[in-house]
Length: 324
Image (cartoon, rainbow, N blue to C red; front, side, top):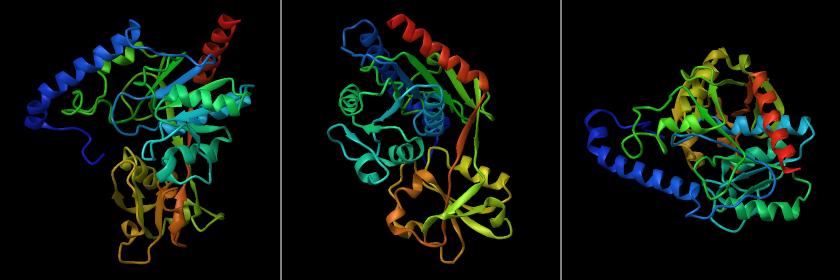
C-alpha cells in the first residue's frame, strides 16, 4: 500500500466513515456467531492465518512454515486462498504452471514452495469441498488470509503482526484496520515479526541466496552484490521490509516500492542502466514470462519460536481427540 494509514486531520475527517465500517464489521461477525448468518465447517481441522490490517504482513512465509511443519509431523495439509489479484471463478488448483492473473501471485509461490495442494476461490468452503474431492488424503487445511472470512468456521486462528503494528489505530478508511485491535484478544495465537512491539510468538524472515530469473540453477549469495549498487523492487504489503533485509545482508540498494499485488510490466523495471535488479518471489511470478538475465529473485523463509510448533500440534491433537 502506498500510504499505510491516513494522518492528522484527514484521519479525523474520515473517522465517521470508519465508525460506520466498524459497526458493520461488528454486526457481521456477531451475526455469524449467533448463527443468524450461515457458516459451515469442512469436517477436518481448519487453521486460519490472517491479520487485522489491510495489506500484507508476512502471512505467506508463515503459511509455508506451517505446511512444512505439519508434513514433517505426519499430517497431510492443503492450502486455500482467495487468490487475490487473480480472476474470479470456480474453485481451482494453483500450480507452478498457473498464471498470476488467473490465480493470484501468492498461491503460485505457495504451490511451488510447499509441495501441498493449493486451491483458490472466493467461497472458501466450496473451495475446500472441491479440493477434498481431488485430494481425499488431505486432513488439515491452512487458510491463507481468512481471519475475516467468517462464513467458514475454523479451529485455530493465528494473527500476524509486523513492525507497522496498527498504524493510527483507526479502522478503514481512516486507518489500516479491518477489525479493531482488541480482536487480537480472541485469536488463538499472535505471531509477531522480531521488530514488532506486540507480545506473541516471534517470527523472523531468513534468506541470503538469490537465483537468476532466467535460470534458477544459477545462485549467488547476497554478499556477491555487495560491491555494487543494485535496484531493489518490491510490490508487497511492506516493501521496506525487503529493502532492509537486503541492506542487512550488505547490499546497497536503490529502492523501488510498488503497491501490494502490483501487476508488473517489464517497463516497471527499466531504470536506465544495466544494474542488477533484485525482487521478491511474489513479484517474480508476475514477471517470469519477461525474465531478463540481470533480474534476480530472493526467496525467504520464516523462522519461528520452537514453542509455536509445540502449541500448534497440541491444538490439532486436541481437535482430533475431540472428534474421535
